[in-house]
Length: 314
Image (tube, rainbow, N blue to C red; front, side, top):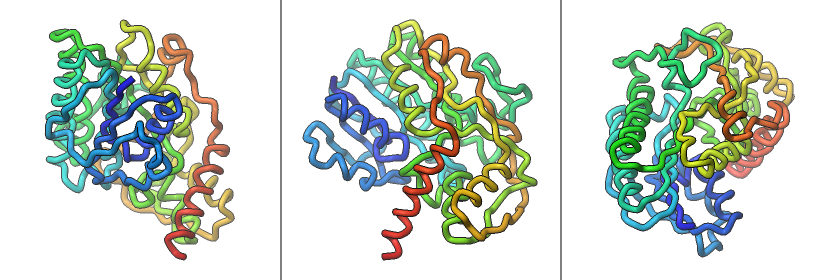
């Protein structure tokens, strides 16, 4: 198949490209490299079926495709808050452009939505029927509300134009190729621990997260994309096992043998206190659930960051 991966040079997108390349598909990667990097795709440079195009989805993308994956948007608060208007435009104009392209091509469309559509949830764990508790005017709204309007567009194109859509709500994901300065807890904690710097925790560290290893997530994305036509989502993809942020910090310090101490800071505005997916739908409709335990995934991720930091210091 001929496949477009928007945001394909990013953390998740590059891992998706690996799987698509191994399956023999022709892949066009479109990425503005705001948070992505061509280094994430360098190992695919010799594959003639993989093409990279520098571009932004707020500008129309041309081409003929059977499948369109949209993973184009900064995913960490540190990055998406750098230019909140651009983030909002990516999630509205960019998604609209790609859905128009899907409609013109008769292509199936995957939207990488997020657990952030649930905001700071009042129910726990979160299932897909929950409408969420989002601050529409806060500093995170460009992303949270942006992803919500992205879902709205998907379902309106589906109802009005018959576009085949697949919407996933992705929970915290980690693994190799994370950006070391993206401010997310896994990458931040590992880099700080490897450098024996203080581990930065916001609040008291009691807030919870569920961490899914990237290989598990990509498997879920592919299963959803190739699921029966009537399975449109939204479907939660994530690990139902829950950890506090402090527990994660302690595990990382232990696994790296770090001398780091924990440094507590003021909790940012609208930072969610709980985050845990109900993946009943994913199990029933996709036959999917994560299989890689946190410590196993962290081992691989720590190795990646050790090698990356060593190469940067060489």
